[in-house]
Amino acid sequence: DAGVTQSPTHLIKTRGQQVTLRCSPISGHKSVSWYQQVLGQGPQFIFQYYEKEERGRGNFPDRFSARQFPNYSSELNVNALLLGDSALYLCASSLGRVASTDTQYFGPGTRLTVL
Amino acid sequence: ILNVEQSPQSLHVQEGDSTNFTCSFPSSNFYALHWYRWETAKSPEALFVMTLNGDEKKKGRISATLNTKEGYSYLYIKGSQPEDSATYLCAAPIPNSGYALNFGKGTSLLVTP
Image 1 (cartoon, chains in turn red, brown):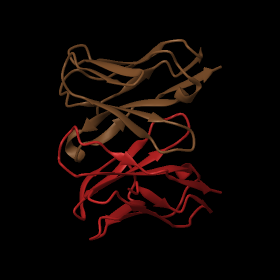
Image 2 (image 1 turned 90 degrees about the vertical axis):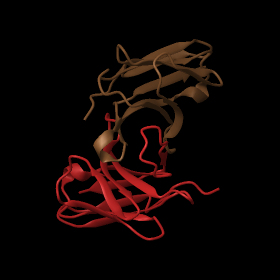
Image 3 (image 1 turned 45 degrees about the horizontal axis):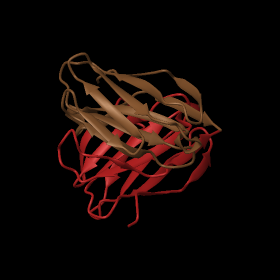
């Protein structure tokens, strides 16, 4: 069975540009979450989507946005890139039960470098 | 958001050693605790989801315990092997965000032959 896939694997952008990251969840999973991980820190929650609706948002500026499509795949958009946006962006999918025990399955991440 | 802390930050042990590390979290409003293993260049892999005080879960040589009253969980690795080298993360669900996860900074384990 295919796991969570993300594209692209690596990306280099310059300050002020915009970027779109993509995620395909495990088949049958209806929820997608996005996390940002910088060196020395654990993954930090950005967004969670379920059935195309935003179910939660972390402490990130409005430059960050996301959406989920009818096939449950998702995109994360970041506008007006800053050097500090350089990070590994992880996508995770889950069944989507609103349950604290719902396991999230992670993709390999997209490494974004902002120059 | 619940403050999740992990210690130590890093650990270096010899093959065959047993080791353990700690995850601490606020004991009030506890929902669950998730443990992940994250090997370099791979995806984070779910190890355990723990919910009940006194829970103990085991997967091969790795086990975890949970104390919700005092707000901590221990992860144990018995007879460490080089393939256990990874970062071990614990996370608490965020209840008003669909139970997305709030992660600690992780414990980086290096096991040398």
